[in-house]
Image (cartoon, rainbow, N blue to C red; front, side):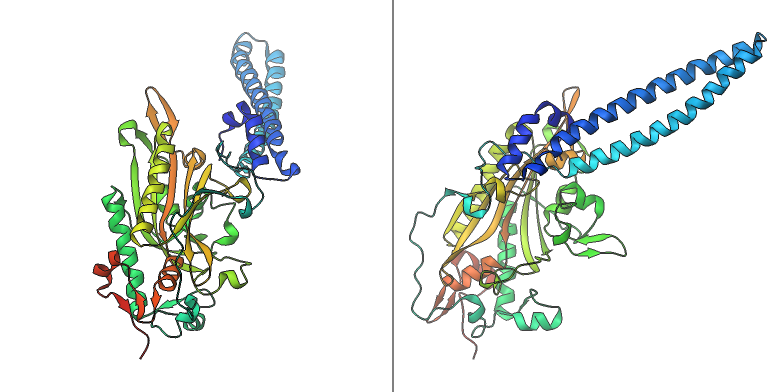
Length: 428
């Protein structure tokens, strides 16, 4: 969340950021509500401090008055001390309520978009940051989208997943499972070469962990909730991996902290219907390799560019055509200051599929996590960044669609040592 001092000192910039995000005018008023509530909090704190100071002063006087025989005056001051205790108790309760309300309001304010974020209402207003410079793949006549290819190739079974769990939980089989595992290992190996430490985190997190990275309260409807223990299935490895450094004070020499992890990801994706979400295009459980960096604020945007190059390098090696979009304010995630989406081209579907988001959150997550570093005698909030490197199952969908031939589905050269085969043949 935004730092209160930052919000007060940069009120107009915060309001301008909300406009870039295309938030309704009534929602923009939350900034003024926060400042007014903070003024009330300060006034209550001053009132409480004055009451406690008066109580302490009177308490010191009472003993002396009793000793000097001024009992009536002492009793009057004692009565006033009792009144102050009641007044202080009531003021303290009001102060606690104001602090809770203030924190709740701060949780509802999204991050301030970076100055480069274009204004816009939806994904239609996203900006092409880097377009594909080569020709888009042309498939032979009779080529099929991946959900139809699965009828002829031993890759995955959507109906079996529905039987076992429900819609949106595919079962990968045979060479399809091997392809999935090979991609994961390839992504992890590439991350290791780039200096990322591999992390194998829990797949279930508590409320504090989900809240620290911004999944709560913004995305609670998208997560699977285990009510009895009040746990959540992770929507991305970003959540547990970034939280490793919650309540930690770093030294400048610790930067950059680079972590990667492979996990299944669970998302309810409520309200997702239509042809654009058929097959593997949108599922409730999928595999993903995430990269996370914790960086010095002066270097975080340089790091963001480095992460873009890493993800682009993976797609180049997989020989997949891709483009990079800079998300507009209306499509920007709640916690992000700047996000770039990678989309690969599906030749069979003739459309672009999002396979990665790479974001800089600046201090938004670190403020929630109390993640700081020592800067001389002071401490400052670190910057956090993360990105998909990469997300399945759309990578699988694009790979099998773009590489279908009359002789089978060809495997990109970079994966063949992982898969142990160079093609997937049709079912016998």
